[in-house]
Image 1: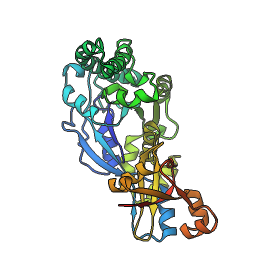
Image 2: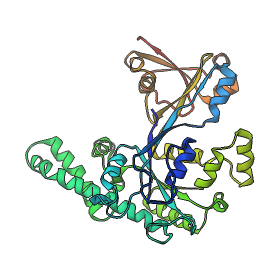
Image 3: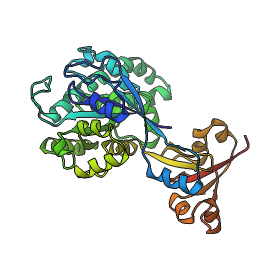
Image 4: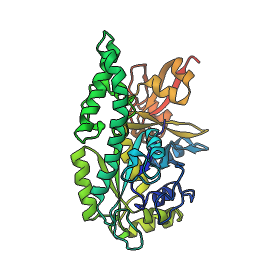
Amino acid sequence: MGFKCGIVGLPNVGKSTLFNALTQTASAQAANYPFCTIEPNVGDVAVPDSRLDQLAVIAKSAEIIPTRITFVDIAGLVRGASKGEGLGNQFLGTIREVDAVAHVLRCFEDDDVTHVDGRIDPVADAETVETELMLADLESLEKRIIPIEKKAKTADKEAKAEYALMMKAHDLLREGKPARLAELSKEESEPFRQLNLLTQKPVLYVCNVEEGSAATGNGASERVAQMAKEQGAASIVISARIEEELAQLAGDERLEYLESLGLSEPGLNRMIHKGYELLGLVTYFTAGPKETRAWTIADGTKAPGAAGVIHSDFEKGFIRAETIAFDDYVASGGEAGARDSGKFRLEGKEYVVKDGDVLHFRSAN
């Protein structure tokens, strides 16, 4: 499994420029006027992982297949979007379909690029968008609560549980807080997710700074980082312009350009790493002469579930997982060496797959 990340924000903050850079395409029009993105643009991006190359060399693989992440460039939200202002309803609907939200905030001054509110204040921008999402959630909940409340007054246990979860979200939203701040038990997490609220989705604040601040950030991005910390959210500093330029360069040129800017990796890598953290995702590998491949699963997934990502029949007929930790695979020079050194393990149905595991599944199907 990969995951789908929606890129949101006010108009003219650099969303489409960032999308173009991330997907290395020109499919999203980047222009200096609101709503230049009318339909949501979608792009699949290979997840960079240096471990793939190491495994492929050892396994003498003919092909390397990375896992992928889907980015959705969603047109700019404006004040009143929850009531249909701008192109609000369409965009709010698109946000419901993503797993996480990358909220791009303008943290740079540029007289040639207009701001819809005529000033640069990323924290206020974040509050504008968050308020619209909260209002939309509140309206959605209030419509759904009434019939559930009636059922909850009877002996319907499921209705009582659903009503309690709705009220947890409702009370937070009435206080001006996003639904993702709800305190949930392990059993409540999945039913709460199924409420499909806009503000329950994990958020990564992406501070779009000028080129000179890409490595260190600036005062505006520092304010965003503090806001994110208070919310229990995450934030990164990125320059969409630099990412756009990097997308045009070959491998060695990219490295030289990054070094000249004091950066160790492209912003894409950092966005993906943060996205994985937000959603609790990990990667395992399969490696052999034909291919070395990365697979994405939720942290905590047991071996049969991990096998099911490859094919549902593997999960149904799961027998065992031949398992080697990544470091052991590399240190042992591959599967044969891992067997000889005692690093090769046979794991059963209760084994929780770890990030970096190199696996081969045995199945009855």
